[in-house]
Figure 1 (cartoon, rainbow, N blue to C red):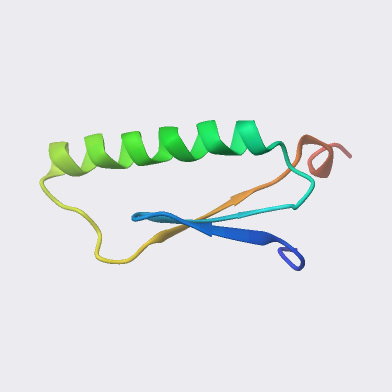
Figure 2 (figure 1 turned 120 degrees about the horizontal axis):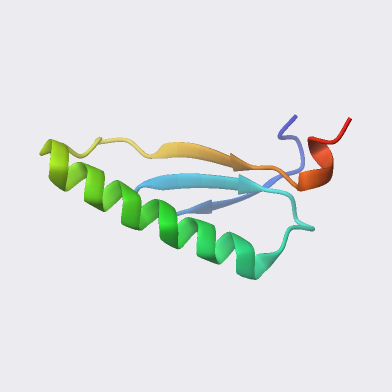
Length: 64
């Protein structure tokens, strides 16, 4: 269900999101992801070599 999603790449993540998504919310989420990944990497003494894919869905996509 990721057809038509935009993609943003960071050093650690590939973030996929709907074009209609909230730009500021996405920026905050990506910043939190990067911070958390850095912290976990330090704690574990390991950083993955490949990016992790994260898909951001809008709230209404979960409402049934």
